[in-house]
Length: 276
Image (tube, rainbow, N blue to C red; front, side, top):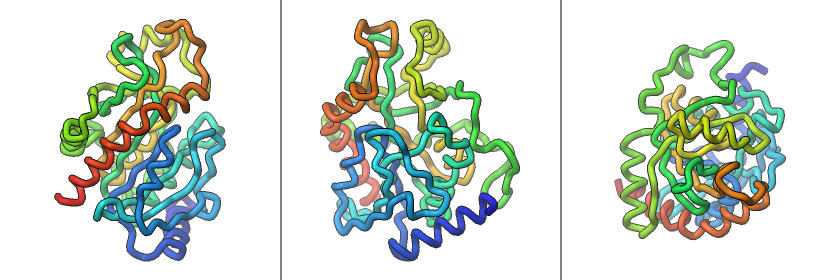
């Protein structure tokens, strides 16, 4: 099947299982944040394995379910986990879930991720609203033939992370009593953690955190007309800034430690969306 046919088939399968009315707002939950989906009332869930074109994640902490329900009076779709290019998924495969959400009517997308802090003042537990990104992965899910009915060949990325949604996240953080930073996310392919020399270079380029996700989804969502916001949870200081070796297990543990603050912020944010 072509990419557009795959998206059509995926959207049809979701409608058949979860219903014809789909939320206009969606969130992608990163490593260790999957239990936020438990906050949904009247939830209905569908495994990625049952959706054409959706590939199951092989990474611990990514459940692999599409869940819809009600969050404080607002319909919300939740992607409980994501796939990554380092899992040997082609970049275009990452585009399918996001384009399927758009086909189903989603026009606002919140991306969350675990990331490494690139300076000593971005320690584990820091929450950061992403204002911009740097793509050093060498991949782009928009490469290849372009479907003009989806988006333009050369999409503008001047405001890839919507200023209004970023401001709403900042307000939600203040109302929730959660400290938050604003900064730049740098995307690498992974799966290895970065070397100390790379970390120094990334910081010199102006990045605040580094991670292995989010940017492909932002590119696809912006291309097809969605408004995007992103929230990074710093789960470790990057290599060379700490004497401790880095591991995914520590990433998940740090995400769990900070989970309550992430939940409070997101609940305030979506409550504001419900009333706006």
